[in-house]
Length: 451
Image (spheres, rainbow, N blue to C red):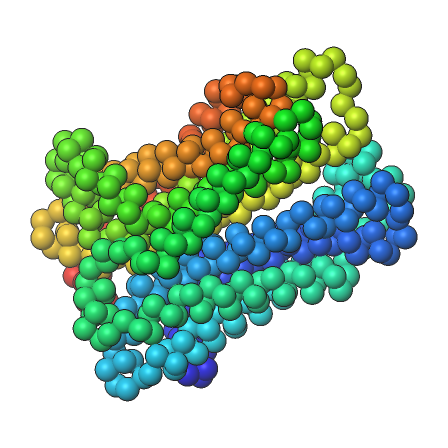
C-alpha cells in the first residue's frame, strides 16, 4: 500500500496540491516563529529581550498545530471524497480497511516530509523578517543577530508531520469503514452528513469558546492587556466549532436561501441543486471562510478596543503594550494569510474536480455562461454562510474583551474593518471559484465527460 500511495501521488499530483500547500505554509509559519528561540539561545539574550523572543517563538506552537491539523484534514477529506470511486474499486478487489488507512497515511507522510523540507527556506526568511520587525519597534536591540537552527527545524518538521498523521488518520478512519456500495453512492452524490464524533468535537470547541468568554468577562475585568490572552483564543475555538458544524449549516442555509437563489433562473436552479447534492464539498469550501472571517474580525476589533482604551486613559503605550500590539498584528497576519491560502487551495481543488460535472451540464443544454453563473451563485451563498458564521465566532472575542476592558459590550473600531474583511473574503471566494471554473469549461464538454 505504501508503493500504491507513491504511485497515487505521482499520478494524481493535482489532487494533493491543496494538502501539500497547507502543510508547506504551516511549516514555514511555525519555523519562522520558532526561530526566535534559536535567536535567543544563539545571542545569549537575557531579561526583557529574551522574554520577548521566547514569547514570539511559543505563541504559534499550539495554535499552529491545531490550525494545520484542521486545514490538512479539510483538504485531505476533500481529496479522499473526490476519490470515492477509486476507494470503492480498491475495496471491491480485496483491499482491507487497514490497507486503505496505510495508503492514505503514507500519502500524507510523503507530503509532510516534502513540505517540511521545502518550508525551511521561507521559514528562515520569514523569521528574519519577524526579527527585523522587532528591531524596528525597539522590542529587541538592533545588535541581536538572527539565528535559524535545530529548534526551528525540529518544531516545524515535527508539527507538520504530526498534523499530517493526525489528519490522515481522521480522514482514513471514515473512508476505510464505508462499505463498497456506500463508496459508489458517495462518488455520485455527497450529502455531507454530520457524524456523531464530529458533532461531539464541535460541541467541545464551542464549550471551550464560551468558557474563555465567561472567564474574560468575570475574572479578567480591570486587568488591562492581560485579558487579551484569554479573549484572543475564544474566536479561534468558536470558528473551529462552527466549521465542524458546516455540513448542517450549509444544508439549512441552502433551504433558507433556495427561493432567492432560484430567482436567477437556470443558474439559480443548478446552484441550489449542487448545494444540496454536494453538501460535504461545499462545507469543506466554507470552512476557511469561517476561519478567515472569525479570526480576522475578532483580533482586529480586539486590538482596536485596546488602543481606544489606552487613548482614553491618557497614558502612553509602554514597551510591553507595543510588543503585544505588534505580536497581535503579526499573528493575525500570519493566521489570516494561512486561512486565505487555505481558502484558495480548497476552492481550486473543489472546483477543478468538477470538470466532468460541468461537461455533463453543458451536454444537457446549459451554456458556459450558465455554468459560470451557477458557480458565482454558489460562491455567493458560501460567502454569506461563512461570513455569518465567522461573525458569530468573532463575537466570542469582541464582546467579552470590551466588557473586561471598559465595562461595556460595545467594542471600539470602525465598521469599515468588518466590511473590509468580509469584502476580502468575498473577493477571494468569488475570484478563485470563477477562475477555476472558467479554466474547467474551456475543455470541450464531450472530452470533459469522457475524461
